[in-house]
Length: 402
Ligand SMILES: Cc1ncc(COP(=O)(O)O)c(C=O)c1O
Image (cartoon, rainbow, N blue to C red):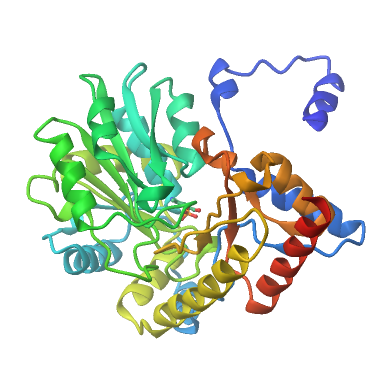
């Protein structure tokens, strides 16, 4: 903030921002990362459990496919909706995994999963329209809803329900102005998973209303207990679902920037226009690598999942031994979300203290919305050695300070 103020003073021209910029939020993970890096520059040793990305490299076969594509000249513009070959591969993959027939004209390839969130809201939510979204939840939902002047309607996730929502509360929140409901399973930040029955109950609460569902399934392949189930698979819901999935988490491709949405073709045409207006297209050589990711050897996905599960198990056991912490076993994604109310500390203060005094970077539950108070989020996308180091540090800190 200080930097912005200083920059503004340095010029005679006042920065005349659009009003809507004051409504745009952010992702705290990147701010905490910067703060942690600043502490490291001062010589402090920090264990990084704040950022949500796999610590694995992109699988070799995928990297090779990308390099080969560059050599072969896949360096030009491509169709805004994505290369037909990748859209075909996505359609086949989603048809198989979600058990519904999907065709390539229902697939829009975009740079990462995030643009599907933005484009869904841009194309569906008018000023004043209500959008229901999980809280605690991925902060970009609320940020984008507010940015567009739509009405953000949080639905609380309950720890005692393994961070699922209460379907009666959902039913009460649905009004004539509800335009979109955002679901996220496996969930960031809680690791909660909506099982088949949860999804059926949600579908029943929606009934036959003309409400769209943005189903954020970016962690669909990172499930430890049970199976992934999409609302898109339920009769009558394919037409009303925008499925968001991608490559970032499943194939450790966060920096490649590639994701996709699956939706009815008439909406896909509008999202494609948004792509034409914003990015033109997703990088062509990355899309060739994406085909290899989907169709090639999947053992690296299995390996990552097994490894995350081992770390989750060890970290949750360790957290539950720490004074004031109690943690459920998350069923998916690579986050754990302990309850810290018994420490007597508010989440943000505790997260700051752990970073500054214990050298452990994590996120306050409130980075994910008001209902995140009383929790912290740790990412287990780090080595067991570092996770154990973090546990020792937090344990020592609580013994000295609580
Ligand atoms: C729930 C959720 N949705 C979407 C995304 C965005 O993924 P991408 O990096 O592919 O844009 C993330 C990334 O952290 C996420 O946690």
